[in-house]
Each structure stands twice: as structure tokens, then as C-alpha cells.
Image (cartoon, rainbow, N blue to C red; front, side, top):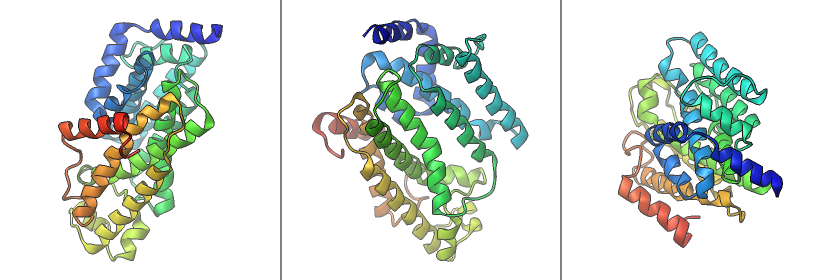
Length: 294
């Protein structure tokens, strides 16, 4: 009981201005997951906002560097920041790194999961396409899956049972797989090939079809394969009776978008990448208060 009280006191010691900066960044860069944090217990939201801001910083590494070596240096900077926080070293004066260090020292975030998220972003620096479904599933699990697990832990003050962690990991993996389909336009512009090459080849499609945004039968078939993978993982994300369950409001959002994709014949270039804000809120509120889609 004393340990819990100390943890809550430490969490409240994180500066309001620092938390607000992270909240704004999370809202701007990761709006849907940000909305999900508003369903978490109020004392846990600052840690969730800091976590989402941290994830946004490392996830955009590929987009802001001109070559892979610079990306590796940037990710190493974040590894060093985590190590310094763990060792009670100097706090880096950065709008995300500073509150992140405080949240880690308060025990509000799981440092192992954060290190895992950094390691996963190394894959973003590699232009090689995803070879097959197994490679894509691993990438989704190490990015979206780990982030959701970290969110579940943060929603419970840095602690979460194994069942809650597994459910969150499944939710995040399914969310990431759906997100890869939603980002088809963006990835094509950036020259990324995230649909499994094996699935594309099976339908007679290739990298050029994606680069030129051609929804050929092979592209549609590959998108359908990834959509089925996403649904399978989302189906594994069930209630566990913990505060982390409130993050399940993301599940019906992903399912609603996947239904739109299916209606479009699995053309990933024909569907807007997100639901309208009003629709998004209705889906989340129905999931939270009426249990629909969970």
C-alpha cells in the first residue's frame, strides 16, 4: 500500500507544463490512441500521453532523416536517454525525454517495453520489403503490439497482469496491421513496401503496383490477407477485468475501418485512412459504455 502511494505521489510530481506538451504532441501525432487514453483512469493519463509522445518521436525517425545511419544515431540517442533515466543520470532537456525520465523513475512506465519499441523502429530504416506474412506479423507485434502492452501497463500504474498484457499485445498488433493498410498512400509515397511480398506474388502483383497505387487483383488479395490477419488478432483482445480494458475502445475503430475496406473490394487506395471525428467518437463511446464491438 505504501509503495502504491509513493508511486502515485511520484507520478503527480511530473511537471504540468511537460505533461501538457506531451499531451499536445500525442493528440497531434496519434489522435485515435490519444482519444483512447481519455477513457483510462484520470491519474494514469499523464503517463499514457508521455508514452504516446515518446512513440511518436521514435516512429517518425525514418521520415526526418536523410539516411539510415542518421536514423540509427537518433534511435541510439533515445536508448541513451532511457539508460540515463534508469541510472538516475542527468535528465535530457527535451520536451519528451525529460517527462519520460520522470515517468520512468516514478515506475509509471515499463522501461523494457520502451527499449523494445526503439529496437523495433530499426526495421523502419531498412528499405527491404516485407518478405511474407510472418515478417509483417512480427513487425506489427514489435511496434503496435508492444506499444499497446506498454499502454496497458501504464493504465495500471506501471503494473499489469499477464492476461491484460497479452490482450493488449493482440489489440495493438491488430491495430498496427490495420494501420499498415490505412497508410497505403503514405507508404507508397515514401517508397515503402509493407504488404507481404509472398501474398503479392501469389496474385501476380509486385512492388511497382504499390508504388503506382494500382489496386490490381494481386494487391487486393494481399490487402485482404492482411485484413484477415488484423481481424484475427483483434478477436484475441478480450476483456480481462482490469483498467487496461478501457483501451479496448480502439478495437471497434479498427474493425469499422476494416469493414469499409472490405466494402471497397479490399482496395487500400480507395478508402480514407481514418473515420470522421464524429463517427470515431460515437464508436468509442458505444464501445466503452454499451460494450458494442468489444
